Amino acid sequence: MIGLFLKERRSWILFFLFMQIWLNGLFFIDSGISNISIIYVNIMNLLFFLLFLIWRYGRETKQLKAIYEQPINKELLSPFQQMYMEHFQQQYEEIDYRLHQIKMEMLEQQDQMLAWVHEMKSPMTAMKLIVEQVEPYALREKIEKEWVRIFLLLDQKIHETRLSTIEKDNRLEKVCLETVVHQQIKDFRSWCIEKGIGVETKNLQKTVTTDAKWLGFIIRQIFSNAVKYSHENSEIHIFTTRNQEGHLLLHIQDFGVGIRAEDLPRIFQRSYTGTIGRETIAATGMGLYLAKEAAEKLGLTLKVDSQVGAGTTFTIQFPLENQYIQSYGM
Image (cartoon, rainbow, N blue to C red; front, side, top):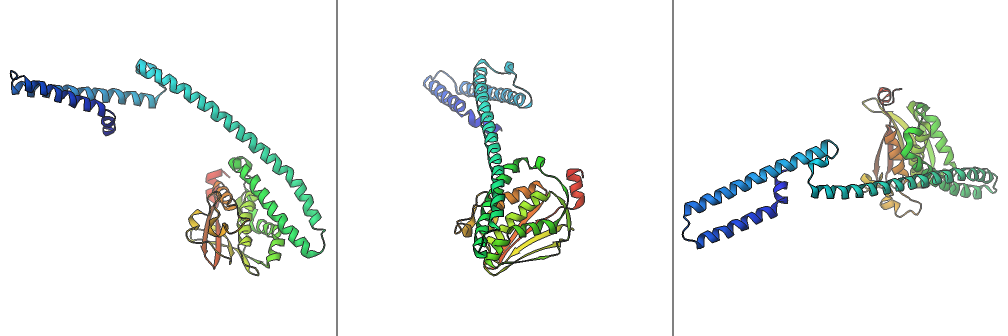
């Protein structure tokens, strides 16, 4: 802190040195002044200058502490400082007002987006019923595949809008993993049939404490990625295990193209599609980001392990029951 103070007062120090050199030059011209007197004057000047710097340092430090610890007391400021403080205060109020306006506009846009997505759900439901009546079967499967893609985009948008208020939107309860997982598999049935992908589930008769709707959203984003990047006529395995600490782990494993090592640290970043994702038109880079954000807000841990050409395994780690009780008072 002292070093920073001296750096900011560099002009004072340079001016003092210049005056000392100029003064000693005059002393050198005047031969009537003894060397002892010159040394004495230089020492006294240096001493007074050092005392002045110490006083200024203490005074400014006291002012800064007072400003930090309590509302600004204008009596501690000089008239010149007060003038600047009033100017900064006015600028701050204008910026704060503008930020408030922007925040209100964003909330209004968010509400409009949420209302629009909700309005889209009704025609989507009607469209689903119409699609189920389409013949021949091959055509229906293709239409259902495109319907699923539209559904996923709308689903991502509505959950992205709600993510900031997930604490108010979630409902913690006992949830059967098997029920939630099978619902997601059912929604992607047509896509899986088109690609010839089989889904094998094992040991899912587990109950966890979480929000069923948001857990379904997280699983949906991971499962859609597994289907999207799986090879045709391959398999997806969904099963549970427990780690050494007793945490329940839900694994979603595919045997598709995999994720490159350089992409792994960034796949949960917003809008990051990765090397393989950039080669896929349908990739938006939002699904895994939203899944990660939602998982963290629910107290879940989302991990990924992948190898190019061998496939990818996403793991959802659920907290222990007593951790939920401590966090949410259940």
